[in-house]
Image 1 (tube, rainbow, N blue to C red):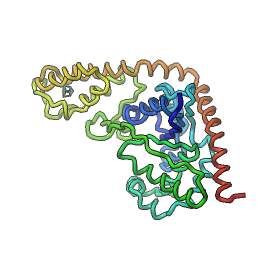
Image 2 (cartoon, helix red, strand yellow; image 1 turned 30 degrees about the vertical axis):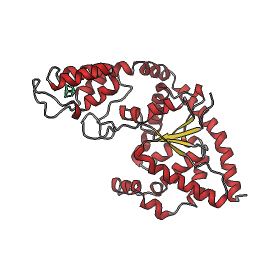
Image 3 (tube, helix red, strand yellow; image 1 turned 90 degrees about the vertical axis):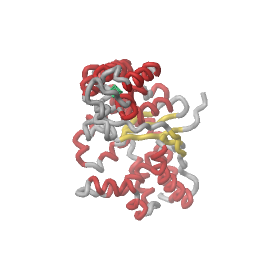
Length: 328
Ligand code: SF4
């Protein structure tokens, strides 16, 4: 089947992935393989902008790769899965692109201002250049498509601007990527308030055992007005219900909706049902993950083979770029 082009996407190494990572990114990554040649990168250099991450880099890279591969990101289908720093041409391209990127624009970006607020004691140069490195990630592989949620389109627009500026100065060498809009639902954590995140410890890891899943689901905040078993509930404000809509068959979801409103079902039973459906959904994933984890060297080997394939594309592009800018 003829593919529509090449997709690039990257994510920082954050270790075991949670339900928010899965529904917001991994599931889309897997589906995109049907229509695109896919290049997926664990962007470890980006992680260096936050110093506390670095102690875990190796372990988190490995755990994340396990989750990605077990979820169905499949080198057997031509997908390239690799670690960003294993293809060093990205740093060369980053340097060259930084020469055509106005500093004022970088420091005015909302994402930079947010980082300055988050880590005022470590406003490093890498934080300013983060979007340029992101542009290098995408353009080094001549990706013509990048999966983004509707609310993230502005991040990609900045990459497109750098590409246009570069091509204006040096000729049409880099590919201007287009957004492939994907569904990126905002998955709330078990606190029912904040976005699911490892740092807030409100997450459910997709590699959890059924028992661990139930433990986390048991802690989920439901409709705060439902104090007693006999109180009618409001599924529309309950995070357990939102997730039932993803992991539970539609007829059962409708039944839960009406049973909740009439206090026909209690939150304990409702959560048990959800935890079971969630555990069942990820059962094949857990099996694949356990098989892969039997041989960690093979997982690293998959990443190294991915880097080799990525490196072939990267070498060609960096040669073209250097030639275009006139580097001898
Ligand atoms: S019964 Fe289910 S949907 Fe209703 S409030 Fe409790 S957990 Fe939420």
